[in-house]
Amino acid sequence: MIRFFLLQNRQGKTRLSKWYIPPPIPSNGTTTGEAEKIRIEAEVHRLVTARDKKYTNFIEYNNYKLIYRRYAGLFFTIAVDLADNELSYLETIHLFVELLDSYFSNVCELDIVFNFNKVYSILDEFMLAGEIEETSKREILDRVRLLEKME
Image 1: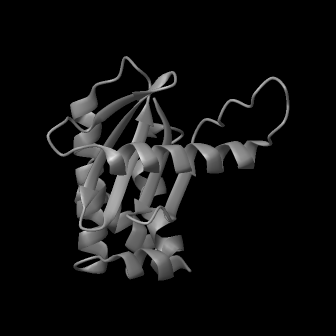
Image 2 (image 1 turned 180 degrees about the vertical axis):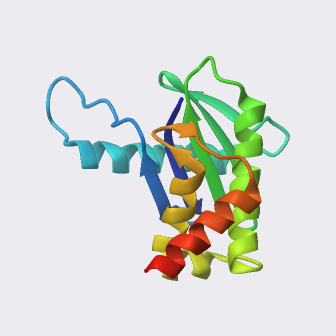
């Protein structure tokens, strides 16, 4: 199951953050849920950017696995359960990038920043409640365009 999906640039700015399972809050109660999310996002960025290219795109972090992929200046990261298949989630990241590329016709970081609501709607049509809902690129894009017409 997917715990969270992050899209971050090289500087560490989170451009997209979708949490399907809230992060565990320390038992001492010193931080809130939002502060814990920000801390985890910063730590994930530090781990992903510092990793050498000769290593795999999989990192065990706390009680889950991080699967990431870099496209241009953006890091796409998915956190999943330890028992899940890493390669299928690597393909999931690639399909999401293809969806963005098809929708925005050669997507860049600015498309994501200025059209974040469309990016979230594409992600919601692709993943639902931490599971992959649809894998057909054509079906997802047709649904997003249908939703766009209804607005």
